[in-house]
Length: 537
Image (tube, rainbow, N blue to C red; front, side, top):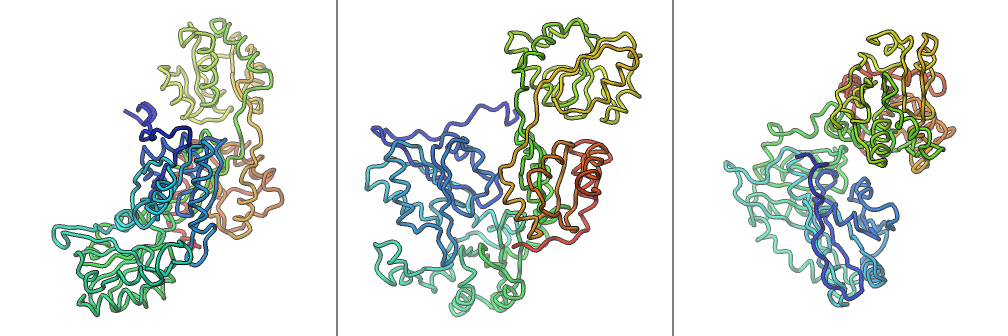
């Protein structure tokens, strides 16, 4: 059963709250958005407010309703967007106003995530809360580096240790100065388990290494540092307790990073998998419509890239409110051919048929053509096997390969308002009757344009992908005068899109041979697999 076919997963039941809202303490996982749990996604889907930190992947916010308030409270060492007491008060205030609040925390909320403190604060005020565990970086960062925290030949146990214990009496307001540090018994920590995993320990690395050796760990014990574990910007540095401080300094390892100490680190080279993809470490801008971006983004992430979604087009109903399309669909059986040029056209036709209480039987004897692999797939999902699919997905190829003379035939083309006229004009010239009806329209989307302009100015994008001429035009309009650096690869899905790039942007560096998402990804993989990886910020 596919994810789309699976029944929705409800979030854990909220306690009886007597009118107050509920706070969901949700673990966002270590970074890879695919590691969010189904319960976490379900909680986000019902959120009125999302309070999130810097280690939660930005794409996870897309699971929340558009109406939901989004509040960033990210923390870095010595720099907090919002101090913990204010975060606690914020959660309580929003919940007491009757709202469903999701506190989205990197990793697991109860593994050094201060989720226990937040839950305690809510409990004391009678505010209901639900804890949704998450995948902790203590395990995931190691796994994505090819390091098993346990292994039958090397380690039968592992322990997770905080890399620092600060005097946080002033921030929390409830702890004695120095009380936390007093709990650190290095004689016990050093031998707590075969594998030791330190979180938030980059700044304290010299002390960690020294204390472990002072308490009996061999200087030759392998150590790995995993920076930004599970993110496409992940970096791994390997050394020993004796030299890991120098290695970290030479490699410029910075937080967030996980420190793994133990013999299991020796499996790194044999089992590494995440950072071997052909697009690993590349930051790729995806300009497709929001409804379609995920398919390309998922393929890019599977090859190690960081997909940054910047939808430049938004799909909306045609200006006539589907009047022309509905009229054409009432006369479906009068057409010899119905030609679909996009998956969007397919979905809108089926939606309008369903709205009228009809289904695929309405096509009668009309034959169906599909231009593009995605269009064909959309039809097959609805039980339709197209009668004609050209080998090249452009109008010229459709005309050249069409299986019968166009003269005297009646064609229906439900498509975007803004599409090219080459295909209908050519068939009309050949003696056919062609009805072109708007099934949807694409409009300019500018949300996120400021961030994209900043990334362009900083040279922070390795690739910009365009999947249609409208994405090129809208991108140029959205970013204005921003200049694309010569080092940034411009990739087009096919020759029509490439020509639009030439006319209003620049010569594309990559044009897919197969005019599909698969073809675009393959072309990028070929071009970039040998290119140097941009250093993570």
